[in-house]
Every structure is written in C-alpha cells, then in structure tokens.
Length: 306
Image (tube, rainbow, N blue to C red):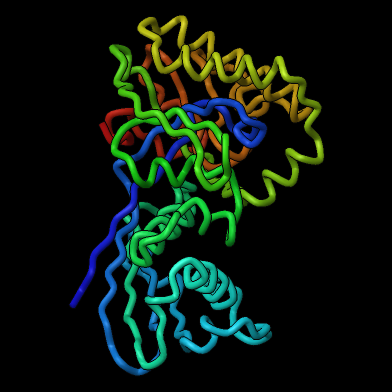
C-alpha cells in the first residue's frame, strides 16, 4: 500500500520574529509545497529520499528502526541522518504504532520549489511526517526544529491565517480570505540569501528590546493588512511594520540597505536579510530587480494559494 501526503509552503506577511512573543501573525500558504509518499516493506529499515524541484536528490538516508525506537546516542552519520532520526524519534514518541519491529518503509519526498527559497522545506516535511504518524504537528515541530509554528498552519490550510502562539502545542489559528483588489501590484522577490530560521530566532532573542505596545501594534497591523482595500494604506502599513522591526532588531530595513532608489514599498518576510521580500508598486518592478541581479520575481497570484 502506498500512502500519499502533501503540505503547502508558506510566507509570513506580518509578524516575523514578534510572533514568538505572542503577536498576531498574518501568513499565507503558497502554491508551492512538498509531497511525500510512503510504501511498506518488511526489512526493519526506512529508506528516505528527498528530491529538489529539479529532480536532484538532496537527502538520501537509510535508518534502522532500532535507531528510532531506542534513545541511544547517534554519533555517526551525516547531519541529515541525525536530523531525520531526531524527527522520527519525536514522531515515534507520540505514536509508537508506526515503527514496530519487523516493519519498514520507503519514503520519497518531492519539493515543488527550490529548497533554498525558504518557503518551508522543513515545515512541509514536518507536517507530512505528522500526517503519516497521525500526530500533533505542532508538538512534532517543538520536539525537533522548534519555531513559532505559523508555517505548520500554512502547511495544513488552503487559506490565509491569523496565527497566535497562545499554546505551543495548540496555537490559535483563524482562517481568512485575502485576495485584495490591488493584488496585481504585489510581487515577491527572492534575495538569494538563505537564512537559517534557528539562527534568525537566536539573533532576535539576543537583540530584542520589545515593549508590549510594539507587539500589540504589530497585531493590529496584521489585522489591518488583511482587511486593507486601499493600496496606499497597505503600503503605509508595510512601511510602519518595517520601521518597528528595524528599531527592534537594530538593523536597517531591506529597502534602506539594498533598494533605496526604488519607487514603492518593500517588506522583509521571515528572517531579515534573506529569502523573499514583498514588493508593492504600481509600476511593474521586474526589470528593476532583474537588472540588479535578483532574477526571481513572482506575482502575488502566481505565488499564493487562493
């Protein structure tokens, strides 16, 4: 029997970093994601292959079920192997019925986006494993990679979400529709500077100088951005969000740093300084960014799962 699973990628439009402090975040699932197929065998091992969007293998490991069922220290193997064992052990702890003695599996994962884009290689993987094991994906995330979990919500739902970290195992998720009249003026530009989520969070925690008013204001911005019907108001909210986070992080905004002559608004998404930024302008910006070496420019309706 072959079982098939799929999870959506994600983009966090509002609330990066401060979502960890309880701010209401506004996120959207993407048309891009990751599939996973699981077939059974009986050799007591799990064969795991992960493919990038171009068909190249980026992870290929074989794990003995004994390494998952036991808690013995794993000193040998690649970092991918150790991470895979960590995730499968965390899944096994929630549901020990999947990995039993004598069973085995062949698992094949396929991304529909380049994994360096930062659209959720890890979160789509975690959510797919959670579906396979029929367990709580938020708990699996906390027991493995950590993070806020908003990306898990995007992996599960085909609509935009308000995400509030009320409980790390049971967060508050509200589904919303977001397809504004000015959607054709929204673009996403890949900066080609992959950021580690763990490093970005650690950097935030070392620098944060938050006050409750800032978290509250970001929550309001998330709400107002999702309800916005006016392009100028949406851009104003983007700019305010950027300035708040610039002050919190103690770094320049991406527009100040890289695109100070651009006519429009630019907002960082996720870890500042890498992955995608959101661009809003009434003039097609593709020539501007491509001429500066940023060749991946995607329109809102080509990126978002609507």
